[in-house]
Length: 152
Image (cartoon, rainbow, N blue to C red):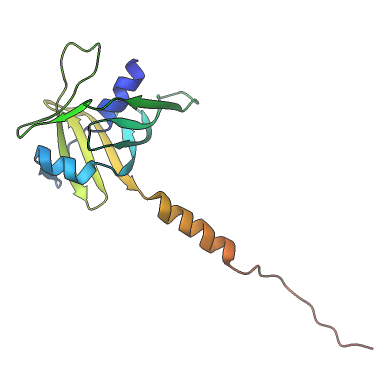
């Protein structure tokens, strides 16, 4: 359960000097429905998606572990108000809130509010583009050296 909670926290953490801090609604628009790979300050990593209903689905790999685990958190896990973006996780005494900083068009850093050292960096992934690139490389003609010898 703790590792699943880390996925929820990881899907939203950050801090960067040149980044643009997003208001909660801006962060929702930038993040919702997109697939992101993430790497956290403690070595946790994975891939996940936060949906507009606040549910989360993805994978998580703990530092030092070879196992990749699937995780799913229900609708309402991520809650956005006009002043904050927070995670509601069963078993935690508080709902941690997040600061989201847009790095560029495809990435952001998220950190727990007040704990800038506790962050994750997120980079958008486009599985369709990766699939198209694999298909394109499969279509490239095989190159082989052919020796042509004159006939007798």
